[in-house]
Image (cartoon, rainbow, N blue to C red; front, side):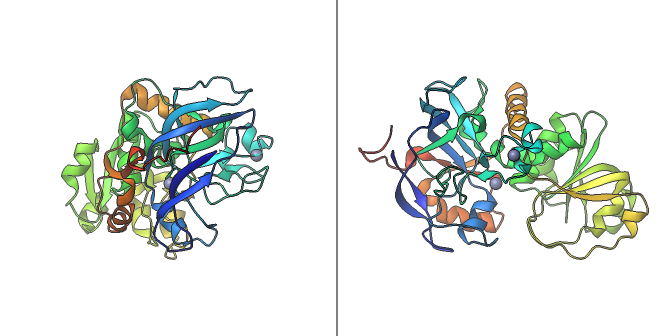
Length: 354
Ligand SMILES: [Zn+2]
Ligand SMILES: [Zn+2]
């Protein structure tokens, strides 16, 4: 089954039109026409092979929203026309303790990532959502609830679940005091979701420049980390801090903001941090943790939650051929707050499709 997308042919090369094959439907497969795909910072990292495990040619994209166009013989629960979504995983072993617990992202045998990974059966490269079609086994296809705006839902599949999962894991609800460091794609979702869960939400930013933006997204307050007096006054004021900073940084100044047994969860930076000072860890049993997306059941829970509460990312729609400029702007953090590609802008040759 032929389709088209935008691919990088080698590390660092610009994304360009690319024709390729999606696999023939297996009995448990769902074929999806992609309508929208979010642009995640990790797409840019993978295109440049910043983490060293990318495989080329590489079609990025793991915030995928579309409609079912065909289903395999054993598919239950999905029919052509259904609005569906696919996130960062397309397969796992389905047989280990983590898969049984609904934490496929921690599959003992390794989850299969949506792109730049290898299919578990054929070994062929997986290719992501900067394309017109994708084929995914039904266990990794999510239902988009009725009424959720498809043109804005895509970033829920990575930025949304990446921030929702730690909020749920650490039991955030009414009365919780949540801090959010960074106000980009991840941070703005953390604010919206924590507020919707009933928490008191504070954006932690270097200056007060983003105060109005933070309040508009649903935060209750902004704390300027560059203001020593304000930081001192906020000591022990948080139960949970979601740290979305995507580069090497020092968590030490934030640790005293946590109450006893509080946790700072890293969801942005994949790589080294500045060496921390352990004093605030010890003097309050404070923790630093990490978190990786969320399981399929939790991702469906997120979509249903957002459908009920009408929570949507703030998106900037682009055409597929604007992706180069979008990557450059994303690097400068010049986006409010997530780019979404309108896949109708990727012309569909006559011989393509299902
Ligand atoms: Zn992502
Ligand atoms: Zn597994």
